[in-house]
Image (cartoon, rainbow, N blue to C red; front, side, top):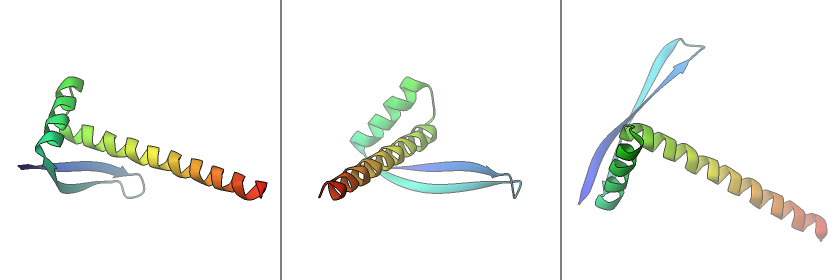
Length: 80
């Protein structure tokens, strides 16, 4: 069974002085939904915050991995 949750984010823009809200709908399998609920309950935060923080951390890990790959590749090129 899949669960649907709505995720909202708000961002303020200094240039525009207005609030921008983005809404997405996410389909989660039962296991992932239970993990989300458990994390939210354990941390005392709502599911939107947990999802936003999770995405930020995943993006940071991806950025680190990309930098390492480029560093390794440049090291291999310079040693050839």
